[in-house]
Amino acid sequence: MATRRAVLLASALIVTHAKAEDFMETELHVAAAANDAGRVKALLASGAKRDARDNAQRTPLLAATRANAVEAAAALIEAGADVNAKDNIRDTPFLYAGAEGRLDILRLLLATGRVNLKDTNRYGGNALIPACHHGHPETVRELLKTEIAIDHINNLGWTALLETIILSDGGSTHQDILRQLIEAGANVNIADKDGVPPLAHARQRGYAEMIVMLEKAGAN
Image 1 (cartoon, rainbow, N blue to C red):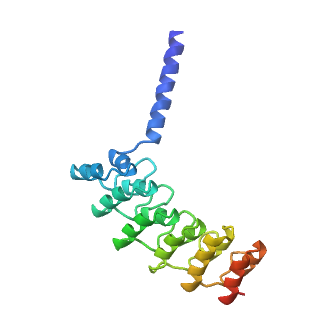
Image 2 (image 1 turned 180 degrees about the vertical axis):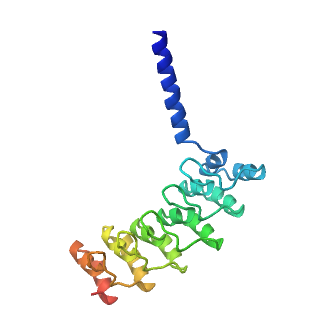
Image 3 (image 1 turned 120 degrees about the horizontal axis):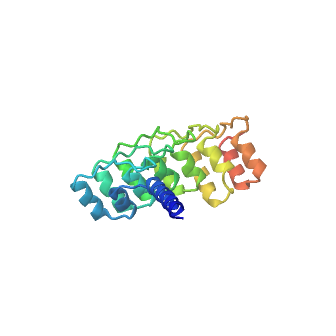
């Protein structure tokens, strides 16, 4: 019985240790995600590594971005944190901020002049494509002020404009985004891998407003 208890205890300790390692974070990551800018600054001043990595290879700045912790992100950016550091699924602070509509943080990142606009996520898309897909019109507007490639094609064979149609409900939010893309000069005739162009996708889905916009823009 004593031996069995010892084995069970040892197993429990192994599992607990494994879980602790799976979720290992530095103190700076914790402060960043909690938006504790004062603590972030204190830790940096005491020698904490601004680009330390957790087990998912996320930096404190990416942790802050994921949590939409604006003040903490600002403190890390001011301290020179890497705005393009990738985690184990190829997210960076910039790519995540674009994809998930972290608008205030995105503006801070762009203001550094250090953002790699050509960087791509695990799907081969730039920051603009998921911003359109996820329905973040203000984020799209901010990205279109930059020199980001508006007609970049991801690994699925889709542009930002195609994703705005294919991965949306055709409602007012994505109509706004489509309008922005068209006004910014997006090519309305780049087809997907199967040769299906944006207008055909809009027609298949019955997206009347999008059909009108695309036709006026010269889609065929």
